[in-house]
Amino acid sequence: MAKPKRKHWSEKKAEKKARREKAEAEGVVDEKKDEEEYDRRNQFPATIHSGSYAAQLDPADTTDKLLDIVAVTKNFNSKNSCDRRTYEYLTPTFVFAPKGVMTDKPATASGQWTAATYDEFNSIKVDPEAWAMQKEFRLDATALAKLRETLAIFVGTHNFHNYTSKLPPYSPQCNRYILSFEADDPFVKNGTEWIRLRVVGQSFLLHHIRKMIGTTMDVLRGSTPATTIKTAFEQTKMDLPKAPSAGLYLAKAHFEVYNDKNENHRPSLAFDEPDQLDRIEAFKEAFIFPEIMEREEQDAVFPLWLLQLDAIPFTYTTCPYDEWRTKKDDETSRKGQYGRGDSDDEQNENDDE
Image (cartoon, rainbow, N blue to C red; front, side):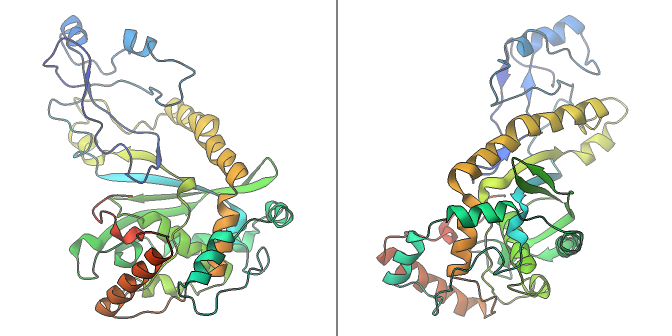
C-alpha cells in the first residue's frame, strides 16, 4: 500500500497479473490505496491489518485469495518493480516415457499438412485402455536425473528465438536469462503420477516456457538428443513442440531489487516466511492442482497431445531464417485451406509467457 490520493479503496489496473495465454496465476502482488487506514495510523505500519476489506472476501471464492497486505513505497509499481518471475508446470510423468512405450501412433510420412493430414489430425482420439496404461507409468530415478540434467541446459543467458513465435534470431528481445529450472520429486494422485517443474527467469517470451518443456519432453521420450536444446540457441531456425498450456501457472512475482533497496524502511515482498509458504502451498494443493487434474481427467489433454506429436513429429532440422519464414507462410496457407486457421505465429510476439 502506498500513501493514497482518494478516500476509498480503488484498485489500480491489474498490470500483467498473468500472461495473455490464460495461464493460472498465484502469488501475484497487486496495488491498492486506503486513505482511511493511512489517516488512522498516520504512518506506514510494517503490516497493515486487512480489516473490513479482507472480511469482504468470500472464503468459497477461489478466484482471489489474500495472503497479506503490506506497506510499499509511494511510487511502487507491481509491474515495473518485478525483476523476475517463477512459473510452475504440473504434468503427468508419462509424458516423459520413452517413445513407443506409451504410444504407437504411426507418424505421417510427409510431415506436411494436406487435406488428408488435417482430417487425420482432427480424428485422433485417446484410447481409454491405452490411457489407463499411461496412468500406471512411474518415472524411475535414472529418468528423473536425466530430466533434471536436461532442464539445467536452459539455465543462463541464451538466444531463445526458436522458443517463441515470429521473432527473428537477430532480435535482441530473444536474449533471456534463466536463473533456474528444476523438477520436484514425483507424487501420485488419484492413480496418476505427477511432477512439478519450476522455472525462474527475469522475463519470458510468448510460448517460451511451453516450448522449453515440450522440447524436454521429446528429449526424454528419445525423439531427439539433448544437444538439440543448445542447437536451438544458434542463429538457424528450428521448429519446436509446444507443451499443453493446461499445466502452466505463474507461481510468484519477485521484487529482489525493491526489497534490497527498502529493507530498512519497508516490509519485504518476498513472502517467504514459513507460515506464508505453507499457506501458498496449501492454496496450490487445494485449488490449482485439482483444477489441472480435473481438466486432464475430463479432456485427456496430455495423452491427446502425445498422440498428435507422434502423428506429425518434429524433425528438429535447421534452416536459415528467410527460408524458414517462407515455409511457415506456406504452411499457414495450407492449414487455412483445410480450416485449421492461422498459426500461433500470428500472435503478439511481445507477450510474456
